[in-house]
Image 1 (tube, rainbow, N blue to C red):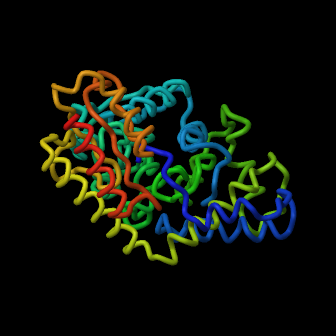
Image 2 (image 1 turned 90 degrees about the vertical axis):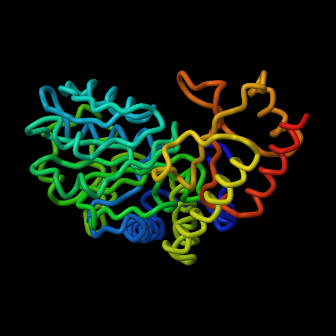
Length: 353
């Protein structure tokens, strides 16, 4: 129950037991095409270029920048946590002029501040669900007011757990990760790019491995399937299974399940005397941040006790909040009321020790 990875769905575990397929095997290519269709359904998009990037969510982030940003481009980035900071770092390595719109950790970013930060940016980038703070940033107003800019959204911790509407919110570029609310081990980064964004690819990506022009020639159905790199076929089979479990449950049902577990966890922690970190009204149900009591001398030791004696992993705070708060994940297959009850019971016991 840390900030990721979450426990995999049983269907995902079973997928890893199947015979391995080659990356050019016709059966695998059919499965890849179906996986991309399932990703479109989960992203709520019709984008042709929707695929799993070979690598974790950070690979999706790099792909989202190196294919669209080059020296001198203006990139506006919302920064209210670690992953907004990482967006700035990647954009700056592409040579961009980075315009930071900062907010205190724990607070959401005002969308209008992002829209007003520069008159004509090439990209406006924001983290939908900030894993370091448990805060949800609003995306829909950005899509409505972005003008000529491309809207780039980090959906690593939101996809499958809370509403994500790529087409409905007018998002141009979005990426995610498999290890959060999709209930699949880390190793792939779902990515979706609309036609408007594809017209603005840089002429030559700084990354050969993450060059989406070349990857699309392999991954997009109907192409000549030009070999680019050896796709992690076992991971794609696992993602196919995880997306199948999610879509069989139904996206709305999954969102509701995550919402219920988040509510139970928030209420339970407050009943134990812990204060929630993220601003009310923008708290993520799938990733909860809570201040630790001052009486807790060694929070790392307490977390280790939870792991050793109860089999429960939770995450510590990052940056200046290390040792001061916990980050508790309730994502994917882990998002079950029984897990919340077990955690709250265990926390109650360790705090009473």
